Image 1: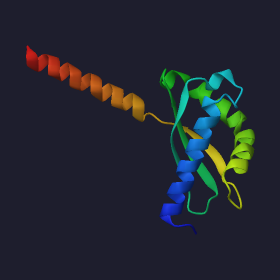
Image 2 (image 1 turned 120 degrees about the vertical axis):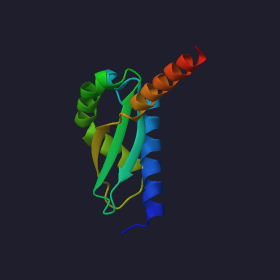
Image 3 (image 1 turned 45 degrees about the horizontal axis):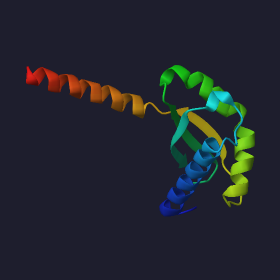
Image 4 (image 1 turned 180 degrees about the vertical axis):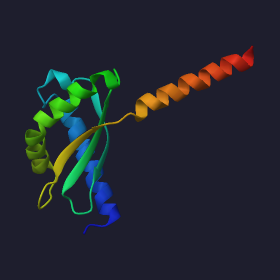
Length: 119
């Protein structure tokens, strides 16, 4: 089993490569425009890579984006395996990351509290 440091490096490398593929337009699916890879977590056995994504528009696009990523998972896994050297490349699982939306909601709440305190 790989060390936690090695797992972190693999996580970061997969996130970096996937992000580059999206930015450079190597994935030709208009449903994936404007999405970002927020986090990648590979399990200790290197069987699965849990990939968290979000979009500027928020959760309204989640089903569409996750479906597009599932459809492209074989292609993405093949491309990633050519860029990241691992004996066996993990299967990709995609999840919607609600963290950016929650952070925005918290910011709005804090801003409303600040305006109420100024009154």
